[in-house]
Length: 138
Image (cartoon, rainbow, N blue to C red; front, side, top):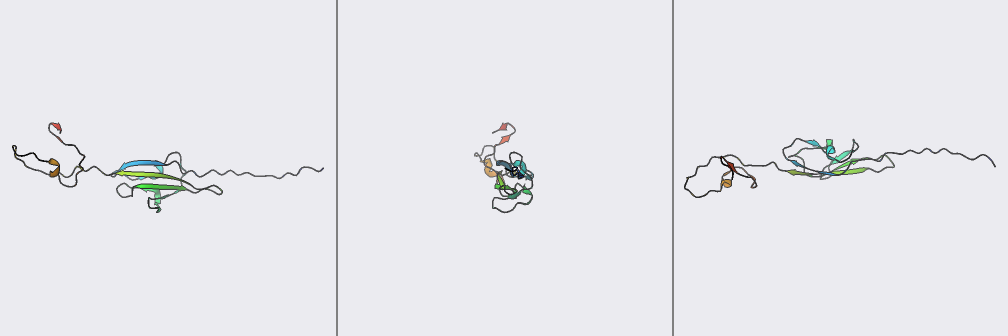
């Protein structure tokens, strides 16, 4: 018999794409804009692309409270062949800024009927507020 036949084989292992872990965040409508990638769990690969809740591209991946649409944003990191793309989502819930209404001055008679102070406020005040005066909350 002759010598064995030897053929070299090169094995290349490609790292899988990592979009990080899904997350959710609750923000107030008056906070500054923030990067959605900073909300993802884990250590996502940079360089992916974002889509908004409507499936439209979100350039830069920045969420601007009070302007952006709340909902689920999807981050996609492309995989190098033969690996698949990876996706993660950030669900954004936005709480509106509290609204105490607008100040006004009203005059009442000391021995007059009781008055609903809430209806005396201007604007569109939130009904969940509390009242306070010189004697403390009431």
